[in-house]
Image (cartoon, rainbow, N blue to C red; front, side, top):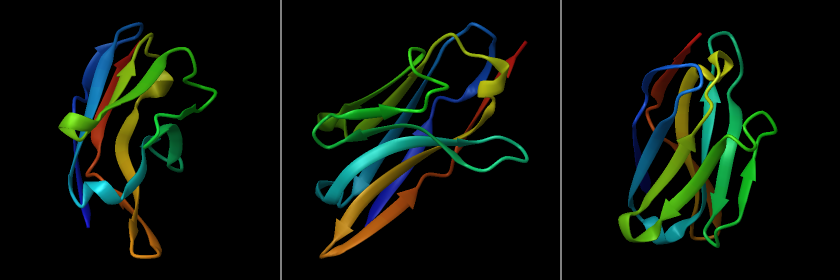
Length: 119
């Protein structure tokens, strides 16, 4: 099993920056990929960015050029560097990990961290 704990959310003015962190624990060697998703009030949860165990990244069009996902394998941590933040980036941000249990694919989520961007 894998457990995730996020941190780094907060209140920032438009144009500002924040860095989110997600620390993984448990059976971390079973993790295939990790990512960040977000959910704004009244909206569905959406993908923000993902990174595979090999380091390949994928971003939502809305954050390309502004957000950067990275991972520090020594610290079992994935980061989301968010720059040029906009009010529409306001949401609860969730860390996700896709991992294996035997031949089964599993997915787990962190508790979420609030990001609020004021105009």
